[in-house]
Image (tube, rainbow, N blue to C red; front, side, top):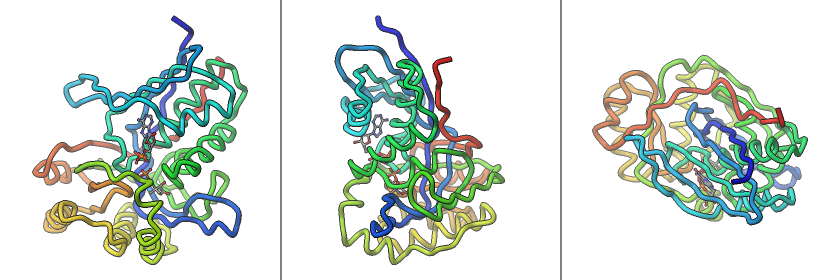
Length: 285
Ligand SMILES: Nc1ncnc2c1ncn2[C@@H]1O[C@H](COP(=O)(O)OP(=O)(O)O)[C@@H](O)[C@H]1O
Ligand SMILES: CC(C)(COP(=O)(O)O)[C@@H](O)C(=O)O
């Protein structure tokens, strides 16, 4: 069996976003989100063929297969001229607004950097990951968000854009997901993106409460809230629990110690905390 390397990248829940104006040349988005402590662990193994296997860790600790093949990762590895067997593992549901496309890219590239001694730094890895996300419409701002931790406000697009990071989101974040909302299906829908742009406000939160207020106002104006999301949001409102829709996934994220109990009435709840750190470049240590 060939040599292997392993790396982790946190997830990222977007609360609000807007695609950046391509006129300024830098592709991506502006908006706000939370870097969360659960994400993707990637194992990269030397191989004479490229392959990607995505696995999910279930609540009982068992491992199930999510899917095989990941165009964004395969593209990034091809750009680097490397072949490898990549195995990603996550506790979180794919395609559900946790930024797992970005997290799987960053963790697998970080592990590859170590395994093949590529000499890339954080910015070098983020650049390739961001380029892959944009090419496959699998995300716009998650890579930039995951270059650090906290709850954030991205004021300029791209991985070198201005990002305000706050770190006082100390209570738990509970999330329920009713199923995937393939990011590309929204980003590739001009009408949906027009409504999303009109819902966007150029404001940045100073507190966790403000973060959820901005997120919720955006979600309400985005046209994306489904009936199932609406029923969860109403229950959270009745219990004074800050909550909004996970962007882009058919789910709800809610804040504070009482949130888990309220969300549990609707299905499986993922318990998360804000992560103080983003992805870490594994060097050839
Ligand atoms: N855990 C994962 N492992 C490997 N590739 C992934 C993973 N999650 C997402 N991807 C890749 O990113 C693409 C888009 O995923 P997306 O719907 O954006 O998920 P998310 O909303 O969690 O970012 C997927 O089709 C897949 O190619
Ligand atoms: C919201 C989204 C465009 C997609 O996020 P996800 O579905 O989690 O990949 C994100 O990349 C952002 O720019 O904020």
